[in-house]
Length: 384
Image 1 (cartoon, rainbow, N blue to C red):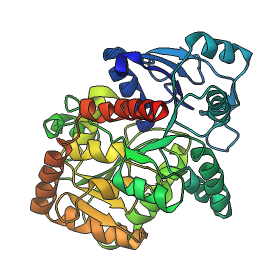
Image 2 (cartoon, helix red, strand yellow):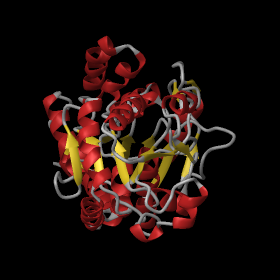
Image 3 (cartoon, rainbow, N blue to C red):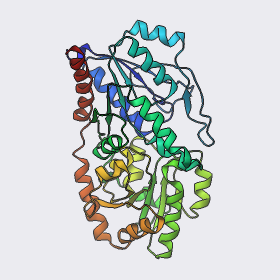
């Protein structure tokens, strides 16, 4: 069996209606698989005006608006109906890939198990950490148990970093976990995309030090610790300005929490590469990411990184070489890590150059081939 024999049904909670790092990776994976001769059909919620066109054939699954305050732009798959089941039967997949543990994925998993179809699940985010950002931290143990029940029914898992694999093992999610890393588009993200005119247009002088936030403006991306850290940094009198790239339901809250911050809104493609490369330091306090695409993109743009000791960042950032990891994740600790980069131009540039060099190790072709090989391995094991 080779890649051309694969017929893959991919279930995603968000394939293209709202752009994020996870669905960018999924679309690239589907593109690679199609280029290599595999058949792929994607099952995910559809909306009238998605953020981007999907790669491959996309089939709508039943869904409702996410019943969580501040997350109304997201859709929650509620299962698979007769129409989706008929489509699955007609497509006749021999491989199932589940990218989020929602109700549609659970129903698809049950459907595949009845037909002895290998099932691979990819882990894209730390779902068990989400409740803490909505005042529901007491639910983390319950969510972790639900995730464990779901993942253990799959044949194998893939996760984007060694640190995330280790976390999943410690959580007893599965015993068969391999790495599906992430790549970076070097035509978009590179230090030579820095644009001084763009900076000036947005109120950044050539010698200003801009600390960048990049991501969807939702609380679980670490907006509160980011804002609290800036308060602490001001106490240290470290020269800086704040550049926020992104949009979302919590933008109003973030603007009030960061008076004087420069908000440039949602950016994509070359505009995103220019905006990111026009910053000076990348600060990522979030602990929800399993890889941190934005961290890799910032490194490719030549920015040193200050990040929380989260699973993704610890596999990317080399402390003392490309940035700083802050395990305790308190605003004072973050501020203490940011201050040297604000005050020392030479340090900032040296770590930025080292990060850009490290980013060159992440090739999309090799990365996506690892997933295809995992599909084939599961089939070979089925045969034995």
